[in-house]
Image: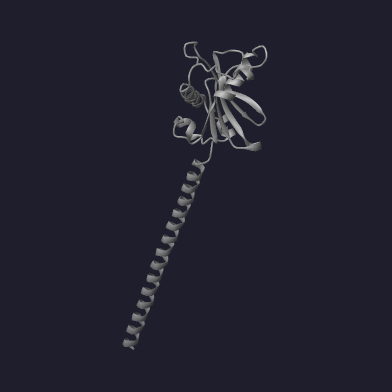
Length: 193
C-alpha cells in the first residue's frame, strides 16, 4: 500500500510538473505573440510615416501653415530670384504689342521668354522648396511659380509683385478655381529686383 501511495505521488508530481511546463510554455508563446504584434504595429506605423514623407505638399495643408513658414518660403523664393539678372529686357520686337503694351503685358512676355523651369526635386532648389516635392518650379526676376499635380487636382504657389504696388510682394495659392493671398510683405526699393 505504501508503494502504491508513493507511485501515486510520483505520478501526481510528474503530471503537475508537466502542467507547469505546459503553462510556462504557453506563457512563453503568449509573450512571443505580444512582441510580434507590437513589432508589426510599429513596422506599419513606420512605413506609413515613411510613405507620407514622400508625398508632396497638399493644398489644404499648405493653406493651414503659419506666418513664419510663409515668410521662410518667401525668403526661399527670393533666393531663386536672386540667381537671375536684375533686368531682363531683350524680348523679340515682333512680340511686343503695338504701342508698346501695358506693363502687365510686358511682364507676361518677360515671364514667357525668360523663365527658368526646373524639376521640384532638383538639388539646386532651396531646401524648403525641395522638401515640398513640387512637380516643377518656374521662376524669373518677377515671380516664382511652384506647381503641384496635374489636371483638376493641380494647384500652385506663386510669389510675385502685387499688380498695383511694385513694393508689395504676395505669396498666393492658385487652386480650387481661385487665387488666395496667404502672405504679403513690403520690400524696400533697394531690395527690389
